[in-house]
Amino acid sequence: MDSSSSNRPVHARDRDDEGRARNARPRDGLGRPLPYGADGVARQPEGVVRPPGRTVAEAQRLLDEGKPFHAHEVFEDAWKSGPPDERELWRGLAQLAVGLTHAARGNAVGGARLLRRGAGAVTQWAGSGAERQHPYGMDLDGIARWARDLAGVVEAGEAVDAGARAPRLRG
Image 1 (cartoon, helix red, strand yellow):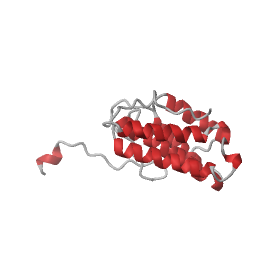
Image 2 (cartoon, rainbow, N blue to C red):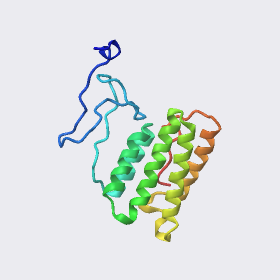
Image 3 (cartoon, rainbow, N blue to C red):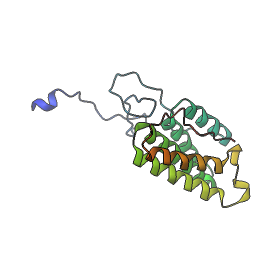
Image 4 (cartoon, rainbow, N blue to C red):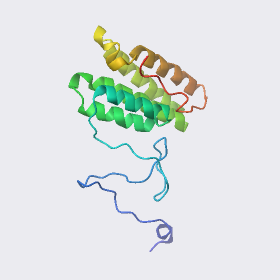
């Protein structure tokens, strides 16, 4: 046995009840994996189908708590389970949450890129009809402006506190 591998814990691949690979390592508030056995932040359950208003409220709560990685998972559930004509909206919002996650982790390039990509997605979705400007009470123009402004801040090298810089989803 080689000595470099004898010091590492051996873990079988984590699997869920259906046998799908799932990483069971605990995570911090920004979704970074922690060592097995460490105290982490409760993970968002995956695949939850929520009404759109509840999706927005739950994501806002998580954003306000400085947990944009977890908010991204809420948006991702809506993206995957929502009506086909809304999937790009929810995907864009998930990108914004991941952009904020990367920015708060100190990844300026990835954070700025995802913030701009998400802003472009929600702007494009909103531009396809007047009724799409304020879906579920959200101010998409304001959200896109927030994302583009934050992308500039991130690129300028300013540290980002995810909770303090969380967007207001509803105007």
